[in-house]
Length: 291
Length: 293
Image 1 (cartoon, one colour):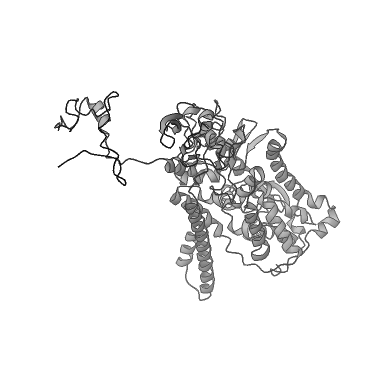
Image 2: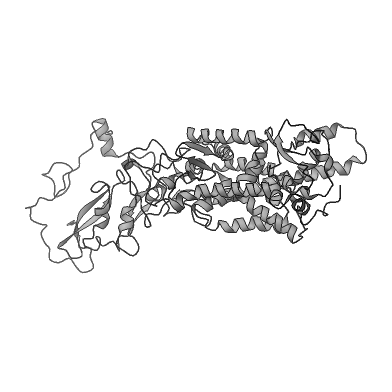
């Protein structure tokens, strides 16, 4: 392995040359389409009067039939001492089962509206070669997660919802942002100037919650063609949680080519930027290697 | 996970080289724990400090009491989508209302008191109580005629707008006729709110013709006093009990009312007014007890 700090500034160049621009951005484009498409589904109601889905990512109602609720929010509600009605419980169960199967942090990469902001910060860091990083320990998020439940229990309110930039972002898009832009700008600047991938990768309790939910997820990224790896480090440069790659790619502590860590957001950027086509999206039990 | 790991490390035979590694591990763990807890404490304190609802922000019909509401509301805005009149808003950061929670301001867009209450059933958690099916039972707040000095009816005019627009007219707001002491020949019809019927919809506040409304909807904790739990109203207790609780009272004669039933102090219309002893001396209150030594 090369030393940290020697990561390529423009990862994916080789992939673009070998696979073409579109193939080298396939998962990124799909992900942006998913993120923006979800925002659009919520916005065509208030903008055009076509009500497909109402509410926001905290709780929603699709086609007046399918209720969805954020299970993390539901647990905070229970911690605050309120037992919600059946609709919210059903909605949270549906969401929880979905992320149990596809991987909790799929939310982070494919749904969370903050992802575009923190991705933009990460891209800018690479582009402008900003190296300084004072990221807190990556386990901080789990303590913070526990802390949000404790705060809910002590105050008897959904304390974290006052500040949660994730819900402030989606609620802002659908119902009016107010001064929420300041908070989103703060997250961007924190990621850009203070700590690389600092918010999503070290602090966000929501990401921590969803990573715990995704411990046994079926959908996984794997490195079946890891023998072709030419150590260009492009995947490490783009990965929001670079520590998850090594065990699968370099057989560090495991033989399997599957990325088991539930911190992997399944964003698929490693698949995009790899010129050697090392990675692919597969299921948990796919142990094929060098296919 | 981390506790198990550190225990495992503690149990392992100690090599000299293991110390810096363990120290680094523990320092990292302490940093993560400290940082995470610090952030949570900050969020908790912020939430605690900001949970008071400002006086002019009202919750949708059926909202649980404020403390419970802040635990129950997911801030999803489904009630806002249910409201056909753009009455409800979700508080954005910077608004003086807990972030993300629904509210309305009566002077802006008041509640139209829809018969089917379309904002309540969409609530997924029950923060808006689904048991509320009769909108006249909603208690979003209480109208208070807060300024007796600018209210036109108190000035002796016949504005009556708050009374006329009230959806529960003649129950929630009545006009209370009083003598106008200023002109001494007119009546004042004073808008009077009755908490048994007022839903706090805000139509009166929205309609008040003054530049700043003289009648306002206040949240219940601000609008209402509270009797001490030990208070008993004698007339209510007597009725419940079928007689005075403290037995018959000693009836002392009242000078000037000797030939009336006990307790009757009403004026008899054709009774001559008290003999005028000339004009009261200037500076006196005008009341004459007629007490002479």
